[in-house]
Amino acid sequence: MKADELRKMYVEFFCERGHKEVASASLLPENDPTVLFTTAGMHPFVPYLLGEKHPQGNRLVDVQKCVRTGDIDEVGDDTHLTFFEMLGNWSLGDYFKRESISMSYEFLVTKLNIPKEKLAVTVFEGDDIVPRDEESAKVWMDNGLSESQIYYYGREDNWWGPSGKTGPCGPDTEIFYDMGKEKCSPNCGPSCNCGKYVEIWNNVFMQYNKQIDGSYTELKQKNVDTGMGLERILTILNGYTNVYETELFVPVMTRLNEIIKDRKMPLREKRIVCEHTRAICFILGDDKHIIPSNNEQGYRWRR
Ligand SMILES: [Zn+2]
Image (cartoon, rainbow, N blue to C red; front, side):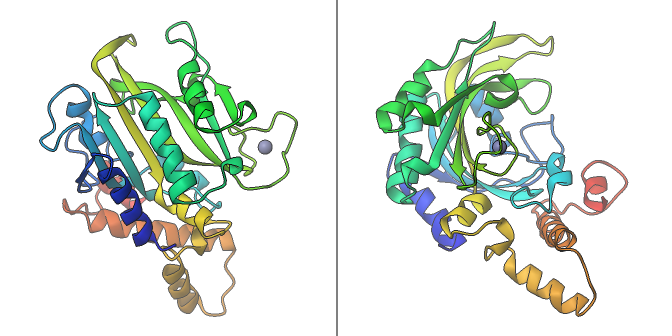
């Protein structure tokens, strides 16, 4: 599977289900002053998640460029990246949990032919403010997952957003791929970092707006925001063990090896050079021309 085939399959699948394709926004968020970079697909949509009408309707699909500098220390492992592409489908006050989960399941199992046994999902276990998400668990089971594939986690793992101090947020259900390794301990599950489970897709059910005082109010409309990491799913579909084996990185690694010739360089360091090179190319090549400087985005660029 090539990256371009995958982007096309994803967009077509959702267009066939009433979504309109929206182009990727800039890496500099226009509609969300709470972040320096577009760290997820949601930033360009914040006004629409809050209730403003989107000119293209209430079902959208996109492939969004993202920069997430918070993960910079993980870069060099098999899957973490500072720059990545997020495949996303959006419901702006239209469908909610049942349809969202069912479409994700259909895309993964029917379109991409991922065996359902290889999936594990997590749902929100509930707390004083928001109840346990039995509804999402039921929809997963109605689609064909067994109870043992469903894990309940708290706010640390199964709550998304807001990425700044205020804004749209809500419980989510995350989809993981089981890489087939042995469980590292009896408690090993999708929230474990041992590498057995790799997160591939996150369906966020945005129904709250976090206020500056830390309280939550219900949004006027219930939204769905999903995000699937292109590089990760491409790795899995091709049976690779890490993102650097995909066509998105192979040419960069090949060029790096040409440059360093016989000099020794640890694999992790090579991966970091490849990943950061790709990230700054996209930051520099952005429509808004972010250049190195001493502040904000330009400072991150230099780092
Ligand atoms: Zn584990």
